[in-house]
Length: 388
Length: 154
Image (cartoon, rainbow over all chains, first blue to last red; front, side):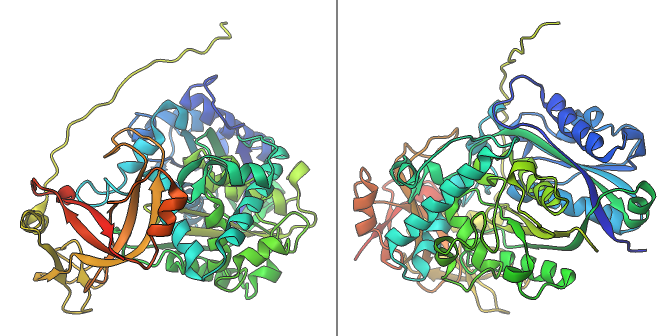
């Protein structure tokens, strides 16, 4: 019953502090744009997949109930998927499962967050168990900085060199975000600005860290049969990989990170990719912290372990390089968390269908989208191409 | 139609009562006596810390209790210098993952016992791979904060 799946429409909102709209109105904006992009209407959709961060973020439990009308979900199966930071990628995978199973031909997938409505770090601190981990794993900056510091020290690299590579990545993401109409942070910064910016969670500084954003993203997934029937321009899903880890942060090695390595391996295997550095044209790596973007280069096989700085220094992962990463400005400049992983997916769709406008990577035909989440616990990957 | 969009302010404040189970209850009772206890999985031979009632890898029950060392190696650390609702102490402070001797799982906790006003100075004293030792609270009430923090000892 299994069938090929494509994404045939995307919709993103402008992100930032969106006090001009209520939560459902924000969803309505993204969903409306996905319909405009695909030429479809709500009545064409057979099932709806949605998700966000833990509902304490906005103070409305089970938000998919609240969002239902804004997704045109009345009279349809509606499911909520939530894995913290990786929610957006889990949503993309859930939508894929719906269509690949053969049960549905057209599925709407929606992720959103309104982080200005609550206390994001306070919400994230409640993700950890109340007995052992909660007092210490201080929201996202705590766990991500623990991981960043461990990575920065694993290979005995010169501290200044690592710091400089991270700063250059921050600048690249910020400059790229200027060309992305949906990005939240629009700042023209220099390496020096990053190096001198305020410490949030040592060794990580504020310009190494993503913002908290309001924003939504929607994509429409279709079966091969439906792509042909509609004559749509598809981004084909050629591989998916997802891997979780133990509930205790201290169990796994977060530097040579098996969850990330395994997610990438299984997605590459499905997509028939043996040399990701050569075969990928673009990658939207989930990069809430600059250091993590480099850690992921290693786990995804873009380079050997301990050599991520070289990819930055040689320009390989910069615009115009062999494998441009996060041409959207990435999570670093845009982070409505429940939408963030789906934005990575939508951005790769835009790239391989040549719709990315001012931040188009010329000739991109195959790309990788990624998100990670949980207590540094989950990784999900999707490989998309303009051909099957 | 108004072009204004106003804000409704509110609170969701809910009390909880979290059941610990007998394994966590004993682990916390032992902390009152300055003992850090783990449980060993007899299938994979890992010593799990804090003590657990089942193994995260083997799915086996783990009721073989072992006392572990209050000393260990600092796997990683970072300095927290931001505020959030429900924070356990005033920033700045340090957190770390500690691999206690004789255990196979890292323990998250505070790193302390040194001034925390200059992170670059701290970074000279708090070393990844360095040795740390548990410092106990005077008044122990049976929770993870009965260990006040882990102090660098070399």
